[in-house]
Image (cartoon, rainbow, N blue to C red; front, side, top):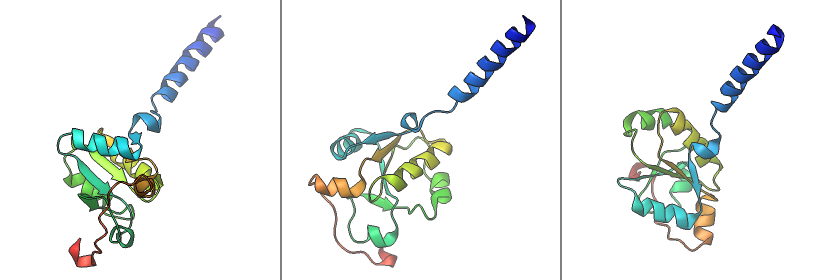
Length: 139
């Protein structure tokens, strides 16, 4: 009887540990391009982060985007952006921005939005991009 009780307590403790880990879908919202654009216009003081490399960003980007490549400067960004800021993240196809959303979640940010399909799907749906080329010192 004591062994059964011990097993029940142990399994309950283990299940509590497993459920403490939130699935990624609860850490950030993945939105299709139209939802992403709509949500961006609805929230107060949003930040739009393009997490692609500069050579990608300089060719075309979403208006008002700030380039913070996943290859660097994330710690600086996490330390300088107010933690309550809504962050809208995108990349080429959605993979790097998901990783960026998880990074910012771990740093305490809770208003995180990922662009499903990245800028590729954004363009396919006919949404506007800025195509004026930038030089490294323009960013």
